[in-house]
Image (cartoon, rainbow, N blue to C red):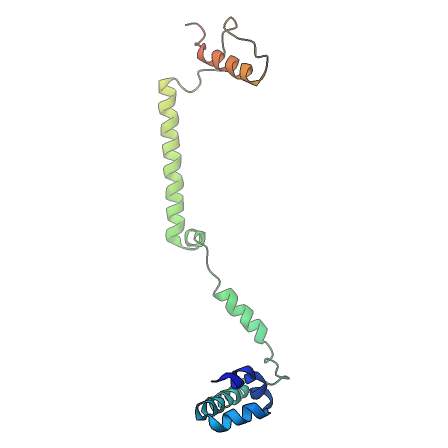
Length: 153
């Protein structure tokens, strides 16, 4: 479309009132005339699709919409484990395996002597007092940790 039509297109489509310069251009330009007629035809078709202002949905419409939303709601991945018999069996088998492995680890640790060896106590003669600024305190803690030995060794 050409300049005069483009500038006043909305006004032309809304009111069908033609300005003198637009009327003169439409009289001389078949392309703009055809395009304007096509736009008018499409506008009328769109107006037939518009719902009336007083249109209300049927009774129960909103309840049905909410019900369908609830039915289609995404299920979580955990519902596969809790809602199906296979999922329940899988969860029970996993818990049993974790219990068996935990029992085995505790047994092995007791045999090695790592469990139940009592609290770790540092020798009193090696302790470096933790005083001073933050750097000195950190160094004192590191010295205490490096000088640690099991009591009775």
